[in-house]
Length: 277
Image (cartoon, rainbow, N blue to C red):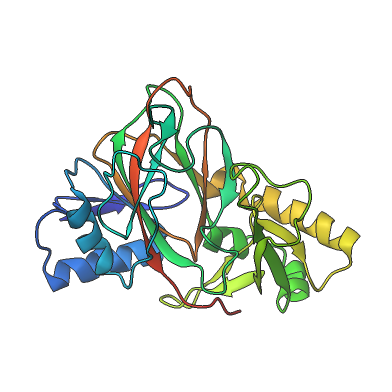
C-alpha cells in the first residue's frame, strides 16, 4: 500500500488496495489515520458491488439508512446505499441529485448528529463536468484572522435544508417546517483535536449570536474565505473511483454537466456525533 498527497490543498491518494478484498487491521489503521488527517481519500480502479462498498464503509462506524424511493429498477437492495444519478427509466429518476451545479456544503449538517463521512463510488461519468470540489475546513479555520476566531469562537450557526426546494441551490426564504439545527461555527474534529470552519454556502442560514446584518456579512466573508483556491481540490471522476470524505473537516460541491449525458455514482454515509466547539 502506498499513500501520497492528492493535491496541495487537501487529500491523499491510497494505492495498492483492493477495497473488495479483506484489509487487515494494520493497513486499515493506516488508511483511517491518513484520511482523518487529510480530510479525503481517493482509491482508483475499484470494482465494487453494493455489499463490498458497504462492508468497507462499515469499518469506519455505523452507517446511515436510506429509503430508495427514486429507484424504479430496484437496483439498491442494501438499506445503506443511495444512488446519485440523472439516469431515467420510463421518465422516472433512478437516483437523487440528478443535474446541475451544487454549492459547497457538508452532508446533513442540518441534523443534530450530522454524517461523519460519505463515500462515493463512480460507475458512469459524463465526458465533461460533474466534478466534485473539496474544500479543506482545517486550513480555512487556521487561515482566519485571530480576531475573528475570538469573536466567533462561541457562536453557533443555523443550518437548514428545504426538501421541497431545489437541493442544489440556496433557498430564497426559510419555510416554516424546514429541517434545521444550530452547530458551532468552529467545530472540533474528534480524531485529531483540530478546529474546522463548519459553515457552508448551501445550508448555513445565519449566525444566531449576531445581529442579522452582521450575520449576513460575516457569513458571506466566511463562505468566500473557505472557497479560496488554495483550500480547494477539484476531482475529475473516472469510473472505478472511490472517494471517502470527512464531513467534519471539509466541504464538497459539484460542477455542472450536460444533463443529456449519464452520471451515476453510489453513495454510502457513515453516522457521526453531535458537533462541539
